[in-house]
Amino acid sequence: MQREVLRLIPPERHDLLRHGVRIELEDLGESYRVLVSKDGASLKKRYADPARDCEARARFAAVFAVLTVMPPELGVDAPSAQLPEPKPLVPPKAVVVPPPPPPPALPRPPLAHIELGALFGYAPAIVGAPELSAFGGELRVALGRGALQSTLSVAYTSRAKFELRGVVGDLWQLPMSAGLRVTSDLGGLRMAGDLGLLAVVQRVRATGLASSRAASALELGVRGGLSFQAELGANIAPFFGAFVWVAPAPRDLSALPQGVFGNLPYLWLGGSAGVSFGL
Image (cartoon, rainbow, N blue to C red; front, side, top):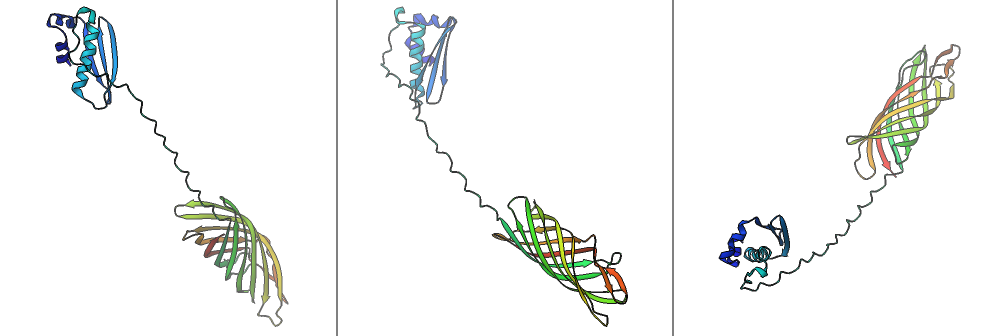
């Protein structure tokens, strides 16, 4: 650019460039800007050059600078080569980017879970209650999609034999419960805590007496449980857990001629395992 400027200015005028004249050329990619400063005043102009021709840029900048520093009335010869007028800047067309498609809707979790499981229960000998153990099965339904669900259950236990103060007998039970469940994710497992009211239909019979009699009773209490589920497939999950049944006021056990010789269990402890199906 300096060479082009000196070529356009006559030698006897070169001293004008020594008095506060500054020429700057700024690269703007597909365009460029020429800034000429003289005596504290500055003038700039921008040209388009998509081809990025450095020599053409230098020539355009030199012509603009010479015409700014030495106007034609001072006797500067016009450039010998007629340079084409630079093309005006054309703003690029706006690119319309379509919005991304909405993510697919996640499937809703099942409204109901049906749990089929086997259970084992153990009643320790507390106060006047005999020690008992029994096996059985349980059907439980949990309703709800959130962390809080309602539950209904019914179970069956095998006959549990006992011996208390010389009396031999057996106990058959049909526990039922209704309550609430709170669920939470724990790593790859889903943890569920249950709490509800318990109603147990019981039938007890003394088998070691000359005259055996069976009696039925309905016990009320509280049931609590904790279980863990692991998803295997679509809406199928095996589970395992533990439970406790509490009957604060169990019925008395009586026989003739002994009279009252004990009571039904206050507490049952147990565990369960099975499969849950989502609907």
